[in-house]
Image 1 (cartoon, helix red, strand yellow):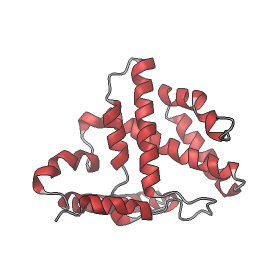
Image 2 (tube, one colour):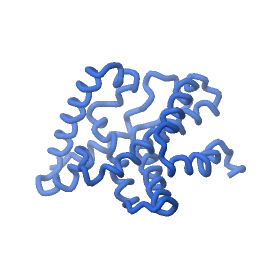
Image 3 (cartoon, one colour):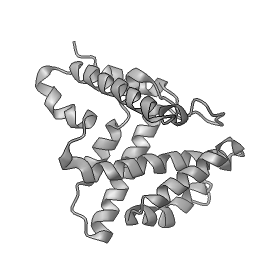
Image 4 (cartoon, helix red, strand yellow):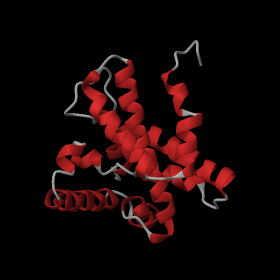
Length: 191
């Protein structure tokens, strides 16, 4: 019996933003799905508008699995995860151990097909940059949703995340933020 997919399915029970008051909880599954379509969008924008030659489908797959180790570890809040270099390194070890455990849940003949989702390969380096951007963009969208619902708890996180996104200096990210981001604050009737 392989429990790999059953373990990933448990991501729906893990809520993000654990230290913050949320008007609506966001599960790790929701986050993974949103990050996947954002990474895909950024890759398409890079290819169509900036001469890129990358695989949007691969970007989406990497994003879909990017936090899957949290099915075992839970979601460690950002202020804790990045408290110090020592804490970050210790958590990286925890994540690597969780990745090893997840891979071991797969039949041996499938493990090679999934390893790059847990242990990034150099061939995917350009895509991982977009996954990281999509991950931060996803966090920013969550902050905006909470602010639009009147939850000021997310105001500092929104400002910090927006600064982080701007510092990435990715033209496809800038395009997404100028062309697509404004619609996220619209009501259903406005859309």
